[in-house]
Image (tube, rainbow, N blue to C red; front, side):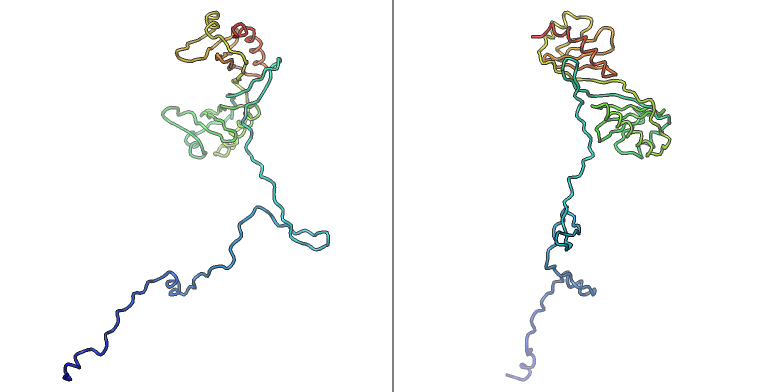
Length: 267
């Protein structure tokens, strides 16, 4: 073979360069940061126990684990108050309505922006804000001139407590001069289970003036006691709702007047 031919052929064929994949560790090495090494021991899960140093019987101090008691739940009871009439018949309160005065004028837009769970519609009712309390679950209506309505209570003590909470909330909204005065209960309702079915049709036919009964619209009967503002809603199953009382004593008077009337129509 000629020298020219031998000189034109390469002595050796170079291999193709291998592609290198950059790893996150390489980037950290390039920046002068050492990669994080895996811990040999795993982190122990957090526990609710607390370690307290206390000397034992032998005199040597050693750690003693103390497990705290269950946390006290701050939610108050929202169950209706269970009361009894003079004859032992049970009844429960619900939907209590109360009012109080703050002797302070409010800016509705300011209340709507500074408090939570507030509804304000300047077109429908520009003079009132609707508050919703979680604990206990009640509603409050704050008017521009300082009057406040509290709705939906099931217990007289919780109703008054919720009214005070609402007054405190108004103070935090930028009205430190808010007061809690002239608190009173405007309306209370009670549910009673008489335990006997009632003939509503016969009831309505005998007391025409005092009764409103339209079975095509609603299965209940409305009875207005003569001489009182109270109204009683009856069902054929024997359950009744007494509406319009302002005091606990009013329920007893209404029940004593209504019981001999409704007993005539028991099955």
